[in-house]
Image (cartoon, rainbow, N blue to C red; front, side, top):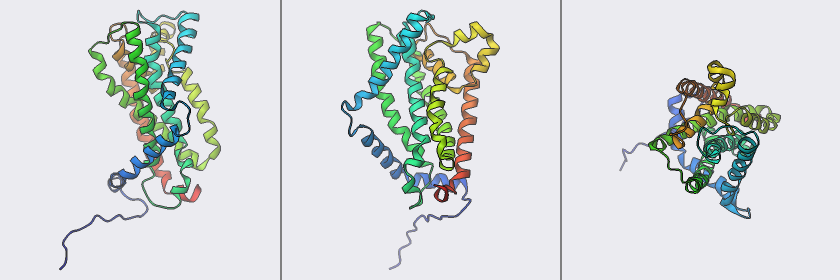
Length: 282
């Protein structure tokens, strides 16, 4: 008896269309979740305090930023508790910085897989985001604790927070895809990544408000400052959490969104362009 059941064929050939490629990613979704789960186990397997690192790291950053900018520099918080102002920026920044760093080095860390089996390589840097997403969810405990401590009740703006998280996600993926592809060809580039993250911290409004930039450099300077896509993300988080005391700069948000879309599109395009040579170069 001949079965009429047809199975989907996986064809490996150069220059496969984007439609087939994204279909392959869906077919390999189990590998995506396996890599994510493996990274979660590796990150916390041999740590003394385990998941608590997801709270300690951002908490210490918040304390330092609050002391330096709020107590020593005496920068204005717009009427909100300065610690919450910093916390609303630190959480998305730490998600972006760790997701960007992990995805940038992911291909090198999994080089043995790239040379042995076929699968859409985009899965490797993409799966690292799951680990950082869990860290982000755990670190929200800090924000909730601070709101209780300062008796601060958020407005309805908090409902829009997932949209700004998605913006941070695409920013991290776009930059991560590009640098991950560059790292395969130029191995010493991975030593530049920590410098990029550190530099990005200083040019992003983590410890201060973007109103400070507007007061010193005017609206033109603020718009140029918004070319950094994390400016729109951080401003959005603060607007969601501190809606009553922090307004959102819509022209800057629009610039950040457009730049994020361009960054993500370019990152995917460059990664796909270099992907066919990964196994030979790595």
